Length: 380
Image (cartoon, rainbow, N blue to C red; front, top):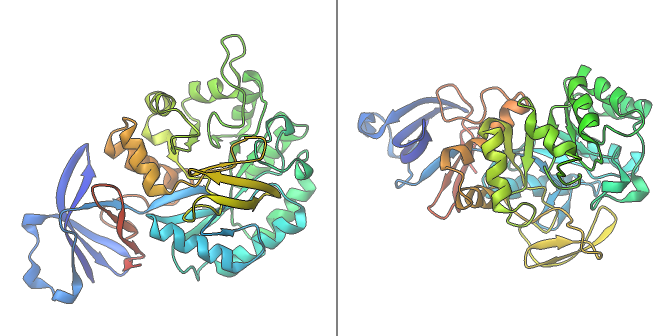
């Protein structure tokens, strides 16, 4: 039994003063502070939140690395490092995310992920997100063109056989030859089919949605801009109420006005905050090798030598702070980082501070700095 007393939570657009009672790894009860009777518990069981904000543990569906570790390097050490970095920045579950690579390197990453899952030192692995390799070279962004290729169902079947059900999301370009067949393959296996690094027209995007694609990776980035006579993928996604979208809210990838527009159109139940972070997250400026490229991080912005943005260095807690600074209300911002990704990934009993939900929790100060993280009811 553990108790987190004297904290604020957001619920029904109100900030409430509550005490959270945890039994094992589950939230047993959420009480108004004045209904909590501390004399019923020992001092060792009670943690005083000092009136700070308690939120559900955030879920990052798209992260590549942190603290100088790239999860494509073929080691368990890199995955554990990202797990710990996530926990330190308010993220309690994440998808191990690939970049386009050789089949051999991808299989190695999957094997190392399987070794770590269940033994994470920090945030929990919720599965794997394959970003590529079936992406359009015309919208490659930082993806290495040497590894981009057309969808190959035989290759994907081999990947799935190795992954033992861990693949939860796959980002593809549906306009490539074999793209629609790949969507159907993935949909049958319960995978979230995402679109990005794509030059899909409006019509091609709508066809992909009809066949089962349901998500947009880093919306607006690595895809055609909106034109009034050629609306493209973004318009199709924004227009379709069933499609959810990722946003990299770092003040670089999306203008604040675009963040507000996406939120206004889609609502918090269809917008996901994500980092898309590379190994510079938590380290800072310098030179890095990522996806086979030389990447320079300057003033927190990661770019290839030609100026192309190359992932981000933002953390989930900073993304949450920026979302509120850009004008998204606090409850919606929290939802976009917690219950919305949980719902998209089918993670039942995650992402809410409610009875019988998982006790993955984060305590934040008034600057959104992480004070404490609880994973499975235990303080990290």
